[in-house]
Image 1 (cartoon, helix red, strand yellow):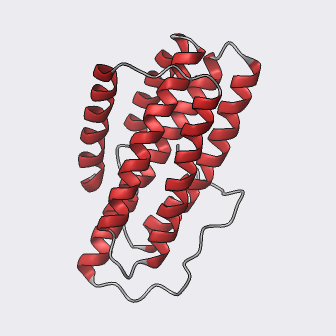
Image 2 (tube, one colour; image 1 turned 30 degrees about the vertical axis):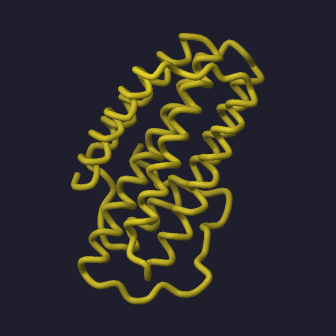
Length: 191
C-alpha cells in the first residue's frame, strides 16, 4: 500500500514527446490518472484476494500472473500522477480494503463466479479507460500511451477469464458493480 510500485516492463512511451500542458489540462490529466491509479490499487486487491481463496492451483496461478501485470499498471500510473504534479488518492487504503473484501467474496462463491467477476470488472475498466482516452488532453501523449496499453491489457484479462470458464454475472450484480465503480471514480477524481 505504501511502497513505491516497481514495474517489470517499461512504461509505454508516446510516439512523440508530450507538448506542454496548460494548468487546466495538467489538472484534468492528473485527476484522470489518479482515478486510473485507484483502479490499479483495486486490481491488486481483487487478484490477490481471489488467488488467496481459489480452490484451483491453476486458477490461483492465473490470478497471481494477472496481479503481476496489474502491478505494472500501478507503477505506470503512479509515476504519471507524480509527473503531472498531483497525488494518488488519499483513500487508497479504503479502496484496497473494499476491493479485497469483494474479491474474497467472489472467490468464495466459486472459481467460475470468481472468473465471472473478473470478466465484468475488466469489461467495465476497459470502458472506463476508453472514456478517459476521450477526455484526456489531445497533447498528453504520455498519459494516452499508458491508458491505451492498460485498456488493451484489461480486455485481454477479460478474454482470458472467459476462456478459463467464467460464469457471467447476473445483470443486477453487474449494475451494482457499475454503481460502486461510479462512486469510487467520482470520489477518487478529487481525493
